[in-house]
Length: 515
Image (spheres, rainbow, N blue to C red):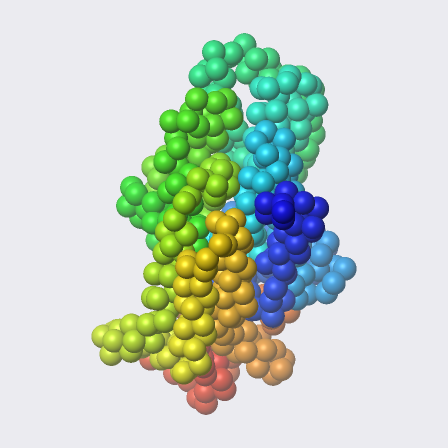
């Protein structure tokens, strides 16, 4: 009789192949997405060009949004492989492989190997985590360090060891160098609440007051902060802590606001196609809260969800810092689900929307007032083409087979859904979206680069232009003779000569003499 999925070495090898395929497919063939990937990649480029690995700069100006580990890892990757989308994203992929390995080892130790395998499968193939694990932004690294810290804290609670305490401090220090105080806040608050629930605050206090732990933390995290404080004084501390941490919590920055329950649909859609397993997993909350591990995981997810729901600035990837507990609950739910059609239903509805995407876009197009948005939607209609329905129809057929094929186990059906979504999103949909939204920006930048002239970015924010130009783009009012990259909807604000490039609303033009 065949062993259940993820119970044999052969299954684990196949899982490793699936994870690596999910992370590496099309990694270097998709343009950098703006604003985030473009900004981090350009800061990395400016570090390399200037030789200054201490001060992050964007457009030649100090850029204190985030600490430096993301830039440093990208500097290493780009220095070895050369500047490319693959090189900028590789550190995130390596961090995600480590994240998946940690998750597997932890769940196998405290639950079992089968649940561990499914938890890793969800991490690599769910829609939102699949995007985060591959993006050239700090979140894959931060998720690795937060997860390592939280796992070390729980392991210490079960079997106290100094090594676990030190590992937690190292994880917090590396996270603090990746994205700041959130890497310390989550472990400190969750561990306090957990040890309080366990009626063991004395152990928590001993961990908090560990001298060697704090020495390690300060030795790892503080030198960069002290170096920037020495160079820029209170301006640096004010911007990185008060503006980009406290300020993001108190009010919405860069128009990233949302309602109190913003993260509910984010989670439901983000963990597609496994939303049924998500609901099944969290429905067992009573049994989970009866165990120390269940209490720890619920406090972890609950704090992240509540904290970022109350924050003024809301971005979809913030809630991913609390996804590890959900991935584990979903892994536990696989063997409890008895109706295969329920497993496949969210995927079916999700893909049905994309099947009718062209109809929705056709309906919306004439109702859009913004010229640029009209051209983007028109580009989607043109680029997806008639073959899109065939691809979606094939995907829907696979989902129907997964739902109703006789004698297949829930585990096998779950793996097949994961494989389908990896191929569909990383292999088809994301490249299509990138071709409409980001490829025109890259093409415009490369045309401008061939003309060997400074470029002005006018009333748009596409940091990736600087990456593809190989030098900072100018951010000022255009002057006579300037090459300008802008949106077609902004052309009426400048007096231009010939259009040198135009696609999907992105325009490269030259400013007329006498402007």
